[in-house]
Length: 121
Image (cartoon, rainbow, N blue to C red; front, top):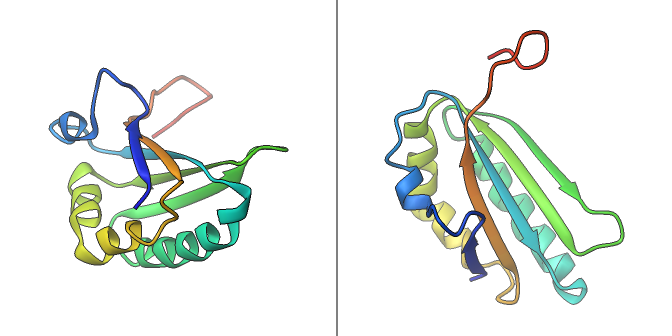
């Protein structure tokens, strides 16, 4: 199981789950030791394939920092209820336990900001 630290130390994920928002974006930051990268990517691929079968998920994006051991994932969910169901699913929880124990994971939920001609949701 990775070490989990909230991206915003003032607001934990459980508090965020109490909000009433329509579209929600999960952002995860992973710091992975180079020696754990292969295992991390295998587990991550398996977990993401599972998540893509869940209702309300669209647009998963996975990126890696240049020359660093930092990976980031963002996923757009149609609503908070879909995210909660996925997050609470036993298969998802079990897959998190397969991540390398030295992995540092930080997560936060975001909502979109509508700006003319830039962001339209």
